[in-house]
Length: 526
Image 1 (cartoon, one colour):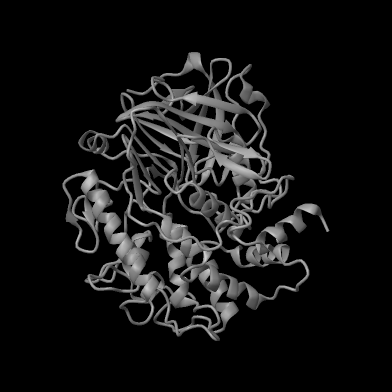
Image 2 (cartoon, rainbow, N blue to C red; image 1 turned 30 degrees about the horizontal axis):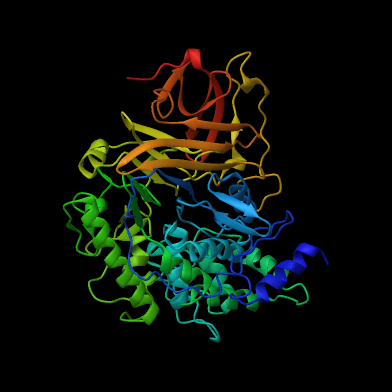
């Protein structure tokens, strides 16, 4: 048996005291597996704004790992604040790491990625910060919809509210939800959580971790029940995660900050309101404090099984009374059922909203007001993938939004632009056998330096899907983060490359195309 696999099994069976935070030394899909996340305690106190010392602080941000352990390993190797020391990964003194959410689902190594993230959080509780993504939040549903560890058949399930009247499996009017454990879990993952391969991926992962056993489908069911029940790996991540986190002039969320005509649930925007009543809150700091209090209460209701009858996903919506965490589940959903008309409406929250429209940046009227009123210089989020490089959006002088989800980087296309530019030689490498959509090369980091209430530096750095490295300082660059027009076509400028060239991108929905733009030809739109 390969040495790295033997070592992995050893790590999984060792006690937390024996191995505080270990990594595999040899390159492998399991290289970054940690055993320190056996059972951490929840956060002792809600912290939504970190105290900022006067000395400069470096913050490294990444997001949307989605179970891709190879990408997580690439990030650790790239990171400016994490270091490998023999089998351990350490965080440089005075540095912070923020993971922007969506820890699981599409990369094939969910439990291993969770162990790494939780291991870092346990070892550096005040310097590692976890954000709650929609793919994290929806796992709260499995306790009531799949059952608890050791249960026999799954609970009775009438269907999910967003399928009502659509004639699909899970339409509450048809009562056709699978009644067996395996069928139920496959349906939940494939049809209601947007992860069609996760069941088979988990089975493969379990087989890797249990090489002397024959892993059966029921083992997969029990694995999901264990990880998603209170005390399990997924539940531990949720216990630590915040829906938003402020670090001086920087706000971290998973999704965008909803504002404008798409907001139908709140009267103004969820940034200023707290479910379920959505009464306005005067300031960002007040909102952070109150929404964190609400989220922690929802977690406690879920953990203790307080309130609620039946399955939340069948009825949907927010409730004033305890509902076993149902309102938090709703907060992580993209859509909500209007109780008066039964229509399905958008449910824009900081977990699910997006700064993109039809694949390209979209900043509604009033976006700059968010920064001015809250004293922000930067909002960093993930959630909606966009090529192989973080997407900066310039809101004003030294005011930026940066999205960091590159989970579809393996699907990127290249367009030749100008003779003599590097885009002549670009080629698509594709997914290259990766279980996720990232391929085997692309990796990125958003690197910040904060001094007190001032943002001193914002860099995006990493490796594009074709292997080209980049490192771009965003503050003070008037080209990056804007739309330009070259030869009659519009491109969004993402990063500066070597030789006075820039990375341009254009998208339609999920289809993203890159090109290399000569700096001399860029004309920002006014």
